[in-house]
Image (cartoon, rainbow, N blue to C red; front, side):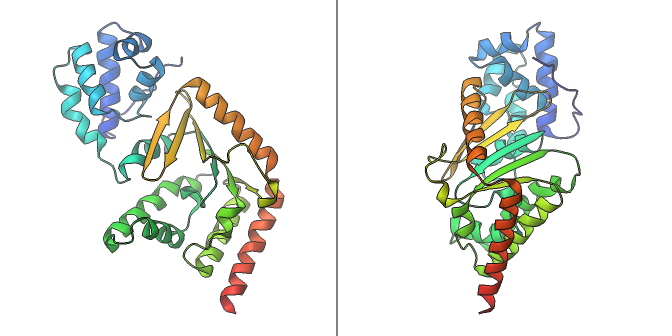
Length: 279
């Protein structure tokens, strides 16, 4: 397994914990696999904690203090590292996403967060939280837009998305919002910042009818799989699960329209939404 990259401990509490965990583990003369065995987790899980790909949870902080003899260092600092602007169930995935070199996602119900416009995101969050304050909704929208800032980077990461046609047909926020959302999606594709394929309704039954898929690859850590449901989510690094979902994703790309035909459909739908709004 590749060794963890050097971190700047001053960059974030999570980076500090990762750097200190690596130092404490090496001082104890343990490999990532050996330390993982004592915590009943994989060596790759330890590597992800050290690289900052995964956040440290309180139960693991306690065990690390016990195994490594660090008194209560990790427990005391775990809370600071856990603070996030994202909903609790998604925070760890968002942090991992920011470090990914490649993101592959199938979205059956809505335009993926990384490709949303502020107006579309606001409509989604308002549907999730009909009684939420405007300030809370504003904060959620701002955090989602911040996640997408890497789309301005001309090189990384690779973002490859398969969107179900049903997500593009669902009028979220009104037809003007949808027209803007699809124009933005088309613009991202035309700027070569993402590969987007549409899985059309007439494709029929497909390999991922039971839910979404999100796969993330990293330069110095094993790939991760993110499972998401209503108000819940978890990261999975089991190699067998990752392989299975990667195969499923490949089947989806084979069933979807080509990127060129997908772009044409997205632009046509954007025009249709704009025209309907004017009627």
